[in-house]
Length: 110
Length: 114
Image 1 (cartoon, rainbow over the protein chains, first blue to last red):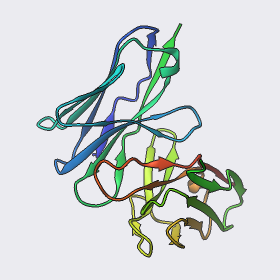
Image 2: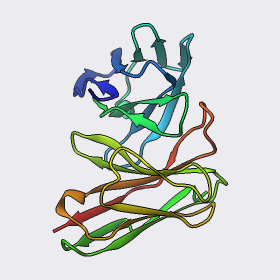
Image 3: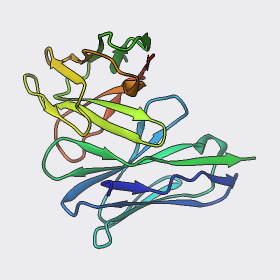
Image 4: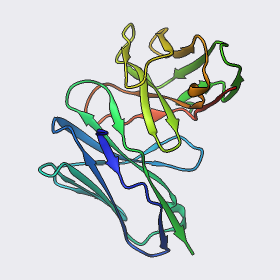
């Protein structure tokens, strides 16, 4: 079983819609969680870290459920510019490696 | 603001040829990483270097070698390229091993092995 799993999508949503992505991780020792965004043929960039109490950054809300080993990303009022692939990233408490999910593709249409 | 710089950006090799991908960061980061990204497979860690002078295997190290030349530079070498190594390679760096440290990526190197 892959350490980080995501629904690959694609998610096609109209502008203004709310969309949610889910991610599960298999290693209960994982301690750090992130969402990265990757535009087509570009490098991944950090979108936001995910904190235990949940956190929000503008239209983006991230949630963590340690008991279920589940992370989510909610995007409200989708914009055309939100079209990208969203990567769930998990780091174990020890060690240096960050493990990436395969990504969820989002296409926001006019 | 250079950040993480990778060279070359594109390369075509024949099976059996060797090459080195170069990576340099100017952010004084301690940790550096090499990932490969293939369609449907996501990003997979090849090797990483927690600090100058140390390197460790990641998820898919076979067929690759790395050198942490100094704090700035981390190179990836393919000794005898195979078609299965056709991929997009990303170098990344991170300040340290703290849990909140952001990973910064280079623009990627697109390698085709014929």
